[in-house]
Length: 286
Image (cartoon, rainbow, N blue to C red; front, side, top):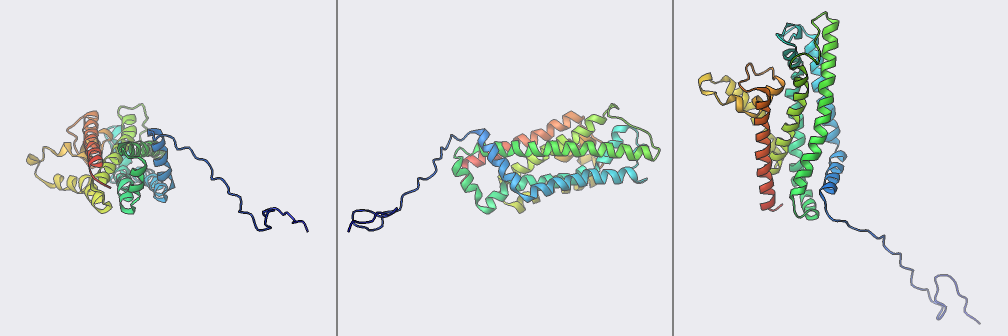
């Protein structure tokens, strides 16, 4: 009898033929570029649930507290301020609390990867390491700047509408210092998140990074404000006080630095800390 040939059987001996090998999908790994690293970091940041919660919390803090401040008669009454800029900076009181949210986001961007061990995989893909740091800076600044800028303008329009409905004095973005105050609050928070990112890269531990951030932006300014004025000449150069000169931090009664000088000092802190983080990232193992 002649052998019956069936699909999958070898006709020579009638036994089953080896299963055909399915070729693996071909992948072409391109070179590691800064743009690709930025895309990867954005994908990681976008996938985190904490990112969405941070953005929502910042919106509630800035706009919600601004509405409460504008609608209250005391202790922060916008119409009772000397200038419109001071009134708007008072309505932006939520920025003081929003900086804690963006600070947590910045610290976790690096310390979280060290805690889970993901940083080893990240640095294995990007052996030159520094593009990872620059990508995180770009992604975080690109997220915080537009989100907080939107919140600041929403806060301004909300406060203006509430104040107008209460019969208070009207104020406009064209009033001296108002636009700078609104935009400055967003610039301040953007630099704050970069400082927090650098602290997370330097300290590598979430608890340590958040502790140092809280001490620098919350504890030390309060302690210094309680000291005699003759020994606190450096107070204006603290990060929070220097940056507060740009958007008119209502918790600081007097700003010794001009708005843009104070912002330059704040940016100086960010540059120095980021440079230290880059130096350590290149020298220390993950």
